[in-house]
Image 1 (cartoon, helix red, strand yellow):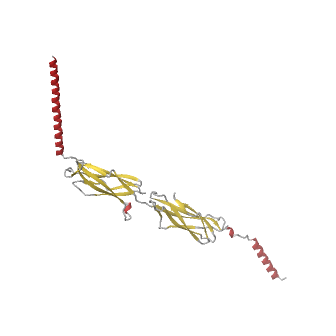
Image 2 (tube, helix red, strand yellow):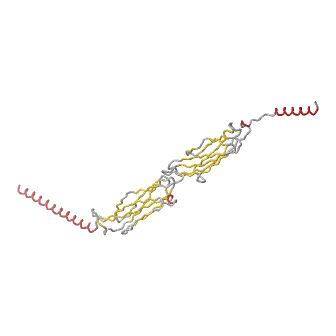
Image 3 (cartoon, helix red, strand yellow):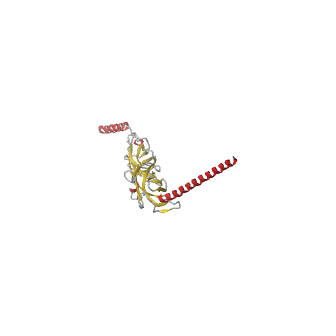
Length: 318
């Protein structure tokens, strides 16, 4: 055996020994492989998740989330949602292929008539498994979103009485109530539509009121009546009367922002009256006084006659 052959065999032997002494790494176990994940959520309408909560609205909004796996191994990724007190629906986990991505929807639900406000929504993706085993490192990603509970306008108006009977010669104030049943502060514009008649005028001490949500406020309509109504028609009670209708119009500032104003009109009926004229009263008083005087005269004569009869009876007995 030549020396070259001996050297070749020795080299092969040393290479085998070296190869057997190197530990074999089982990458299938996931050990030594780092997990990684990324998530992005995009609301359908752009920058925020808008939810309408007016009566009859859907009460829901949603965002589309995309979770990405940048590694060369399959990952199981858990999904956790923090919704600031709102009801939420989302998958508990997703499995993403190596170098792939998956989409899912997060739906948020609010309560009807919830107050207008902004809330936060955070969606967190965390790697639970990589190639079927727990990862050697912690890997997570969070997407933060804004949820807007949209404001809606709604209100009602109530009058003190649909018919107001007012005696002329004085000034009056009619009271009205505005109930803001919308879910946010609103301003209300007030105006009066009516035909001026015989010196009667109406005015508003204030033409705009601001009311918090689910609250009520009062406004008044001032009525200045004329001093004389003797030329008006006479009703069955002998009064001189004049009837007029006043449209009290209330509109919401918020309700007018979209072009179609939210308006309520109340019809206030006003009956102005004047009792009989002073001349008629004087004649009546005269007749009444005359009758009273006659009663007094005849009564006095009757008493005198009775006294005379009693005196005559006494004298006869003597």
